Length: 91
Image (cartoon, rainbow, N blue to C red; front, side, top):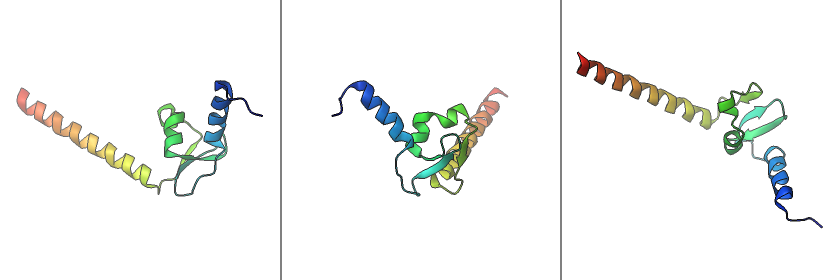
């Protein structure tokens, strides 16, 4: 019936990423271009954030985005601390 070649499995994997049923709690955003919900893993696989995709609509209330903001603020605070330390050593 179905062949098990690499070409066939790759096609299913790509289609499956967009056309699979997921729970609402797993969805972190909506793709306006493909009209589907995206999970955290799909978001990373597609590279939507690194591409700064204009079609991505974030579900702001999701824990994923809260964690991203928290990590971002921690990195910013760490960078400021390191800059202050370096500034004090130079003068």
